[in-house]
Length: 518
Image (cartoon, rainbow, N blue to C red; front, side):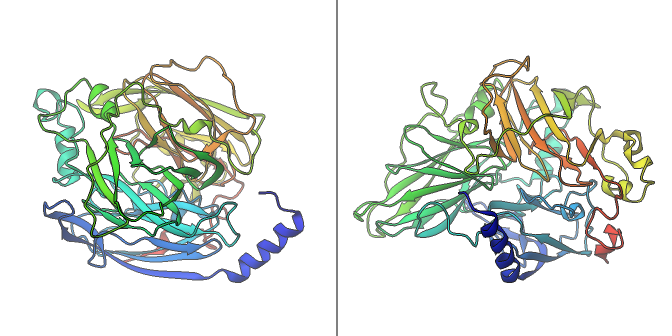
């Protein structure tokens, strides 16, 4: 959508006038839940689970007072996909942008809503969001959408485990022949829709819904099918895209990704329809050289309900490892703002990612380096160091930082030397996707058919033995950007050079830790 400068200026004034402070008070505790009939401890908010959806308007300030009532675990809340410009110490990554929030401590997060679209919040402590500490964030626009819809709904997808994740992680990293899973990731026990099993979603006939799909899973990707209904994609990771009609393609969503789709319901209310979610069995079995256990079901079903008195239909029969299936290549989509390829680049970083071991435990390395968490948050090290000294990567130890100037164009080439696929997320930015290979497509040796208006998003899957190339402008001073594999993954840190690290954050005193009280 093209607007004149006058319109943009007026819109900015109206947005500021309509902005508000949205206050939430959270007590994070253990609760018991049985979403698939198996009761287990989960991490909830204010004594309830699933955790609540947050609905705000662009221009609002989200203010969340968090109390850690877990008793036995520290925590920290990341606001996935929200850029946090000049607000890095609110990003919620313990050891990187903040100290751990220990039991019986409080912290106030202040998150400006400067973007529209679909996002989510989750714990950034290992294992906590698969144990339940997660929820969608929908940032509504004050400007009418360039497409018609009547109502909105949210659909979350996640894999679920009957054993708490810290226990599974401890078993996963057992070295050598004693590893219960042979060095492979534990398998999910169920699939949840909106953190429920056998979910029923009531719809009205002849109604167009804007559906916010959020993949809040832990390990495999998800393939989503709504039986006998067409879907049109209009957004990816908060980026509005030119509408893309899906059939005959299927929609695959990686962990951490979000997709906005339009769906128009039928006028006939005599039948209900299955919503099918298939876990990526390539990722769980084929690429890992193992077979599904006898009776294992990698699929889940919910229902689109037109008529409560009509029977529930069986799910469609789809085999996600069928080579003839045509999954949408999200790299081919076009952002609706047609932002040109940013050029020229000031930095090209080539990352070669390998599976490895550390002390006999499975890990990953980037350029033969592994991430070791620092004693104090990396952002604090930058803020409290001499302005010249903080530009020296050696200052930060084994967090493997790269220092760039504010406004520089950064290109990242990621070569995946692993025979499985992995999602990667960049904090503080979205990025243009110049190219990505198909599985076993080889490593970077030059550009291939780069779009003049590349797709943008903040979470991207890299294929096995393949690569991707992404590009972004470093416009978030002193933001420590991190990419990760949500299961067990590497980290790297990118620091944007700013003349005054403390003033680059919105705390007027430059004291990020002052947000903590015991």
